Image 1: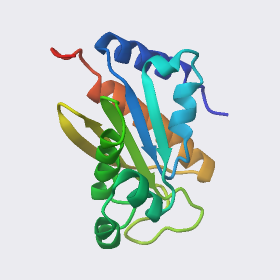
Image 2: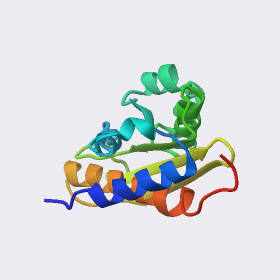
Image 3: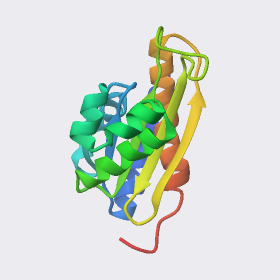
Length: 168
């Protein structure tokens, strides 16, 4: 059993409320795990705007505006697609920040170039642009997905929300 995300989500809530900002999520391999963790907290509607689970490539294009040629050229599990998902989430919401995640949770679907456990993340902020990173997680499908949720949200807290900005 993994440890609960309560402390992490409480810290995110506090930081977002201090900044007067709202968050949205765009998820693929985590299947809404981030949105679920964030909305487990009563009152999350004050700082969590909305989320998309865009599991298919077509939904990434249709709902988030990810150009299909990016997916064809780079694959859904790529830096450019993660960034496009985060930017698309901001464009289709009133949120100030977005976190996007796309990866290969397994057990199948991996290749030599993109093995099971590879997950790309993107964090976008309207005033500051977009940052990306990838991680390799190990374990079974459920463990990879849980680890991706935790790591993506922890990075949001540690990097994008590390200090209060001088704007609102």
